[in-house]
Length: 118
Image 1 (spheres, rainbow, N blue to C red):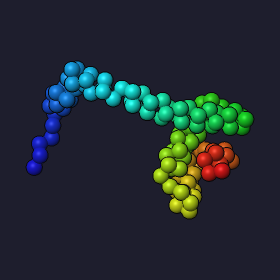
Image 2: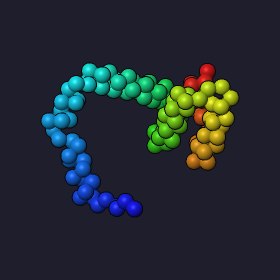
Image 3: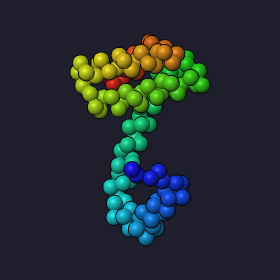
């Protein structure tokens, strides 16, 4: 039966894996690809956030309540990358039910869904 590792053992293992000369060389070799991937991933997140912000501004949602809708939109983005057609529709309906239980407005959720499904 494997032994449960302690924090010290985990730290030692992490330190061994992340020696500066090793990590630096690995990063330098993949820096251009890493930066392109970071920009691509970040641009999608920012675009989604801005589209949802405009919906929330128009609907008059107070800024303190935006997080629930922004998290819904991020989850929608993940869903549309993984599912299509009837499967996506069923998944979205189930997800909407969860966000409605958290107190989200169904009309706003539907507008966010339309951003992704057309």
